[in-house]
Length: 312
Length: 287
Picture 1 (cartoon, each protein chain N blue to C red):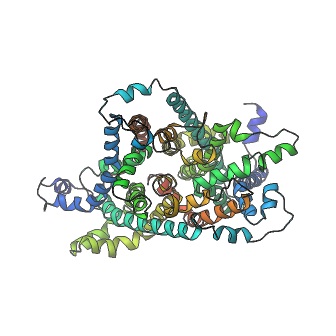
Picture 2: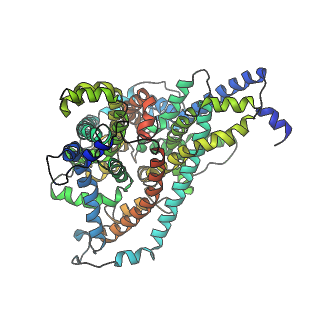
Picture 3: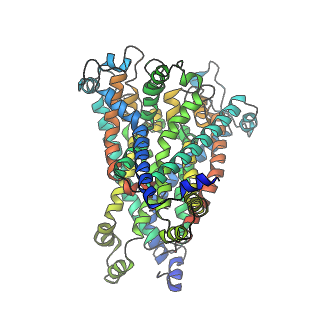
């Protein structure tokens, strides 16, 4: 808008001079920036250091080993640890299933809500509610009320229909957790896709209608390409939160074969009972590397949405 | 696609009305099914324990379970202390987040620093770091500085969780403040504090409220840090809810009452702010 050339030179200013215009511009930013660096980046650097040592909780062993530097030993051991591989596979399945299912259901809900009907606002309010619940409460509701083999509503329904009871959580831990995650994250996807649907220019749709295109054709050839960045954004933001899922696992199964994802495994290996801080830190660093890979894609999608935005 | 299907999607005038009604009915069915676990839990919270465990309703509904859960046995985390802890931690962390994020958003949106885009993306990249990767060092230093079990440690961490989100959201709201107003204030020689107070805040107020609300929701619902760093008597509402799961005797009605109490404030707040929530959830990318 008013970003003139003179403004740009002013912004750069004279580096090093604390009273220059550039530093005066930076000053309001600094408290927030320093805070975030101190609380999120420094512990992470300490984690990298721990991952190169054999640090353990001294009170947990009879003959405490002195802490020493072991180089990349912890990292070498990661890939021969069958539990880590299993946790990795669980993480991938849990994240991909939850994201894809909540995205599909969320898109269908958004298409429904995009039409005008009686009680539209009320139904949208109902649909977003699971997303507002504490993750711990959502998991408890499903565990104790829906899935439970003793009191569970789902088994009551199955029995009523003449089927045998199913031990949902013990026999299908992953599907049970994915159900809860999908239940909570579908509203999130719905809101993002709904924003996409509502930003679609209506004149294009009308023109297509006049040209005699059918509803499905319009959806596939006009709406879906328009929704693409929104779907990508939803998938990537969802993935970033769901890959870190902890609460639902802790409450529903407390870990175990088939439901321990990588964050939960790192937790079990360190403060959750393993107390092998050195190797747990190495696992954590591996998780960070995977997160960075996902985040790179996420940031690319986000910045493509910012492309048309000029610096003010 | 067969001819019949094609006819089904291309609608005549008369058909359209029934389809619209059909979509409305379908949306109602879907909405009610989706909310069912919540509605069932709220209903259960008014039942007796016997009715709750049998999923029946013979003994009527009452507020009995609500009074049960608010009178806890000694030695456990009580509703009163969990609620106070949550309230203090959420309120203080949200206020500090806003105090830090408001000037930062100014420096990223209104008089942007050089490379404002990189700074913005640095903020958001910190949200992508898994919390487990840093929990152990945080634990070690919290112990060293005697912060385990205090509200302070949760306040420090919740600020870090919400600050990037708040900076992104506020920046997107600040961009909507008309340039002319800010330039006029600058010509008058108004300083940053007064510019924020008299020009920007009144216009961006609804956006700031929505930002604060989203910070409140995330802090209120946080479980992992509260569990790891602040167990027993110093802990917050999510911990209190899980403390109502008992291994002896029936607890379903009490657990439902506790869940309802714990979620109600945030659900009401979220309902009130739902129109603006999308911007925060998409990191300010969508309106």
